[in-house]
Length: 634
Ligand SMILES: Cc1cc2nc3c(=O)[nH]c(=O)nc-3n(C[C@H](O)[C@H](O)[C@H](O)COP(=O)(O)OP(=O)(O)OC[C@H]3O[C@@H](n4cnc5c(N)ncnc54)[C@H](O)[C@@H]3O)c2cc1C
Image (cartoon, rainbow, N blue to C red; front, top):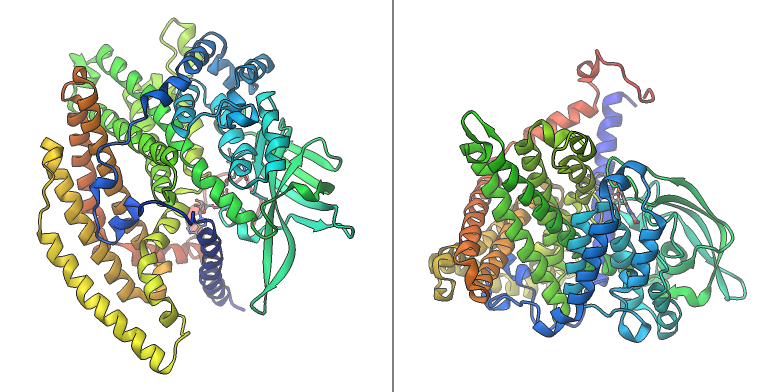
């Protein structure tokens, strides 16, 4: 095979495999969908051209009695962190002092989400995230220790899917300070966990499973007492086809056969207790299987769905720190005759940081509020919140570093040595970068949201597209689709011309009118993209990304406007400042939306695709020459 044909075959294989795998993963995601919910998802409806502000207006603020539940705890936690947790030292030594972990355990930090009947603090999602905002803003390492344990570690899947016996046995241990972890990723299995290799074989007498395999990057894995681990179990034949089964187990880490091969070291979060773990004939009692055999990925995805709300909270905490640094330094540092924050480039950054921080806070508290209300399917909104907040924080940190100039690049300790305020922008930057990669990377969020965006259309035409229908059934399906779309599509045009009226939004009404109009355009654009590219659409990732970014911006705009009005009404002292922030955020978001819509038809995707192929085909190797290559040779 020539180099060229090999490259072509590889590309072809990749495209077909990707499509098949995507389908598999999405099928599992479908399985993980909450079946019972009270009202339809706000963001999901936006993709179909339906803007329903009543689903998030008025803003669902935390009820007073729930707030009081955590106030005293949060005060104590804050005082403890201020006095005893030195984030710079933790970053330098790569260790969180043992006494810090022990004291947090005594306070109940590792049992915030454990229900009271299991000896936990029984916090609502909102109170838990209030704690996350504080901890993560003070020290990223401690933040991740707490959240990896509680958002995705054993407490969360047990609460969602555990039996009464499992809950009674394990949940009280977290009030006694036990720490947990979540082990899904493997060396060859990252974004696509359906392909995992770790295997758990049921013993002949059915009393236990025998686990073999490896897990990579398991946060808290090197110190955890108990973890939730996903592994393949025996395949099952379903509808005549053998289907791979992935199952989830509670595993006590003092079981024989567990080896911590490596404590992994990262660019940021340098005190993470993150492990590469090997399992050799590890016995797991059969009663430690969570839910059922074959439900492991559904458990993992269901857990991450709720776990994903924590990342926006952590990001919001870090964004608020950046805002404080940018504001103080922007006014204090004078260059070229005036404070750097007052030069127009500086003002621009400050306005972006402040308004975007409000938007991050809005989606964080909105999604938390929905979780606490219960019965709301929030998969789409939590994915959007994760996507938006992680990307937004990265831009905010970058701008804050730029405003700080050389001091932004300097370590807090080094700044402190000569008596300057030890603002740790470089540490925040190192610590937050990974947020765009884990718990569903930006690209995977795009794919996930794209599938959700197209889902109503897919479901309507699925049988036809899959060739499952013939004869009169096929004809009647085609007629049914023609009837629906001959009404739905023109209605999306007509409704787009009707401006809508939202007097309760005051000066933000124009943005709600825009959201309504843009949601119709989004719905039409999704439909036209599907009609044009048909099954090939799933390979047009850039096009899909633009459409889901529009949906995400519209969701965040809606949340931000609703939040701003609520804040203004709640607290007269804030004056019109929430409105001014929301107004500017929406102005920026509208520009981004316009750019995305423009790029749907006017883009350079084809050229980029061709060029990337040539880079892989190796006829541009010359460009890599002239440096000292330190990696292995091809
Ligand atoms: C600090 C840290 C902590 C972690 N903690 C945990 C933990 O506690 N438990 C755990 O199980 N895992 C953990 N992980 C693993 C993490 O969840 C994975 O890194 C993540 O799932 C991505 O997998 P990957 O790194 O193998 O990237 P890959 O899946 O190899 O992806 C590499 C790049 O390709 C992109 N990509 C992949 N597929 C597609 C596609 N279909 N289309 C377009 N782009 C694509 C990705 O977005 C990414 O940019 C951790 C990782 C890190 C770095």
